[in-house]
Image (cartoon, rainbow, N blue to C red):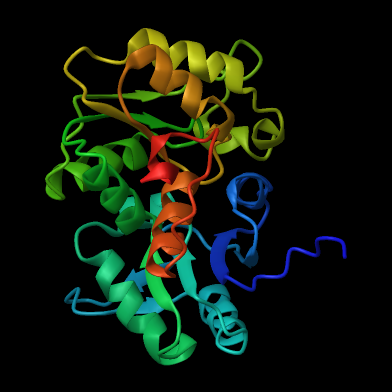
Length: 261
């Protein structure tokens, strides 16, 4: 019989940005046999769930609520809100509040998580305490600042941070103009590899590449070999966290040491 990618070991649901192709491509590249990946697309701005006036709870965006209702019927093992900037812009407590809001919609079956929690768990599993934080070029200054603050408040203060330079064709555009102009589908991993290798601070004990739409998993192994330090990416961390909570412990080669933990 031929492989049909049926998720007999685990089925994982992920909420992703509506017009991105990177998350599914990277997850399918890394997923071990017997694990299937199922996406619900969200078109809202970050964060995808909005705090109420006293920050005691969040209200789910319509796309998030609709996807959660669909996931509820799919017998999933885990579901992650695959949006780094929602965790960052939502700030401390947003991840847990969003999970609480999703629970009554998705149901008691699957493990619920967010990309922020996934990356935190990944860094801690690899004993990284001061990562070099690398961010996509389409993150504006507000999001960059929120990202640094998010990991600082989680006790994982970055040793440094870098917003990727997308090159001459793109660098004169404002961050919010990059994706509409096609930068998301023109990503190259080689320049990203060169920038991270050259800019990683000596006192960083690892690297975190944030942004689920940021193409990068092809260079994780090479960076680890060159830097001698763990390298975590947004999609890699979410896949790892969902696999382990689903009881799938198969090691995956070629995409960083995290997927062998």
